[in-house]
Length: 474
Image 1 (cartoon, rainbow, N blue to C red):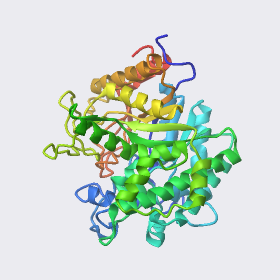
Image 2: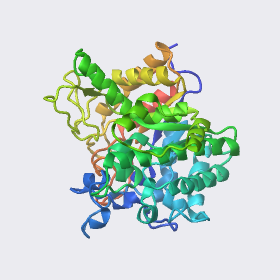
Image 3: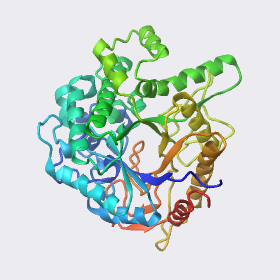
Image 4: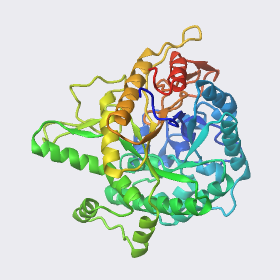
């Protein structure tokens, strides 16, 4: 068999805060991502090192406009359908449903907006795959409760979940509780609305907030299954195996430790308890999460149905202090791998690393896997309405071949693939529009200027062929 399994889900992915815009329309409330600037202060805010209220008045916030999908979603989904999408992964903006986050009653305008997106997808036989929380925290919850450092957010999040699960019962099958939950360690404000105060231990605060998110995720899984037994609820992590820099056992051990930083979250969501290495880490770092017996029961009763993940690159780890890791455009510091090439933004390109990661996750969890983000950020040139992005085609072709090998040779249970982002959008890590991922070009920049007209890239037709052949023609 040279094709993917029958029923494999092909599609693409976006996030509300990177594509929707319309930030004050439909009675939407303000969100943390509305206060992440496009330029020099961006990383400081996202990483919790700078309070957003200290930003200059002339800062520009790209997510407020993004690609204006709020007004273009019917056109955009029609283009996804033309490519042959069978699944579309998108996220809910929390403050569209509960503008403050702690109300008793949801905003009907927001629910109607997402219901129309879902109905539009279903009219084209596209399966909605919804991320409940993708870096969207109502600003009121941050100012009033301190975001996810406060256990009260579990209840507010569950109210959002119950609203969505009830409203969209019979229309949506696949849900993801939190996007890239491990990103809370690297960009706590962007991922969880955390602004780290000078007198706070950043590591402890991130793990405390993560504990609350893990409890919320487990409760959401149980709630979803109670509302609709057909619901499938998954976790998501930013993945990519860490290679040891050498066969020195110290380097190998260091790579294991770095991988565990990511596995920590999924281990709990899949298995339903804190693994021994996690408990030892917390103990050795004097981090108290105040885990109650009730917490343990909640985690054990809320194990996920599938594991989803993003994959852009692998990493390299070493115990040698003279080998310096750096981010090079990514938020995960890593030593440069001399065997790999890199994108324009310094992200190293490693298709075989995707196969390695798929095997590592499936060996570890024995749960169905879905790749919900994978793609190449690059500068695309629009010439007479055309974009020749062979570099993107080559990148995706190599990664899809790695997926095929993982399924057909290794026996990995991979059930779906949604490329990031299937239409150009604002980059989360850099706030740029010139770092483009999509099969569809959007004439807009990070300052909200442009016609916002959509153009099909060369990769559009290529991916259309890949889907039509179920991965046989690459």
